[in-house]
Length: 314
Image (tube, rainbow, N blue to C red; front, side):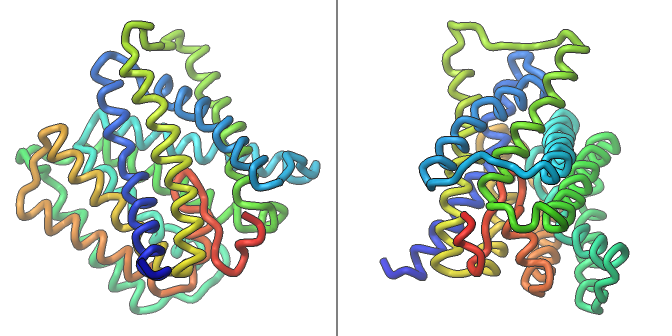
């Protein structure tokens, strides 16, 4: 296998592994675990994995004082994004939720335009129309029921908080910090949100010792959408570059849709399928436009990736 083919394969594996979130999360919901408990254990198991990866690459854990507060804010933003996405799974099909979440690159572009005065193009306007058309087609789910407004609000809150995180983490004192170190501290500070919420609610759910398979699900959340996704994407960027790797991110919602249909019995009508395709196509064209690709690739989804021209910081 040549290096280019290997890069595309690694990029596909990275995106698909992140799309496996519902595969591990929904069985935990079925036995009574709430999103806060699931995410607490996901973060808790992922933190040492990333710490090991950080040390294996010869990096240290040292931070400058001016970097601590921004990292706390970024950690809370990511935790909010995770929590609202996982809450949305209680209100709508996971495939639809994951596809709606995928509009975050458009939100990043709009934030960059209105806050940092970057130019809006007619291509972006067309992509927004396509995405909104796709959302309109998703108004009714595969079973004919109207799309949950609560679930939709949760997904868009997740997408917006993540978009703000992407913009924020690429500005100021964090811009030059190694990607893996930022990720480690984002998870470390982010887990505090779930600790506080669980402490206040008193609804801390832990699988029983006999339910070993549920511990496997919690570990799977930390391994597949975390470590494997991170390692495969950073490798893919080295082989094929940042833009193709970011575009391959479209496989994330596709994977979630397939899992929803094949594993959890969700239904996809022709109209819903067309809506999903329109959203994925619109966002792919936005990413392919190039002006936000470096932002999206370095800090994409919960576990950021490093662009080709800055791989020395990995």
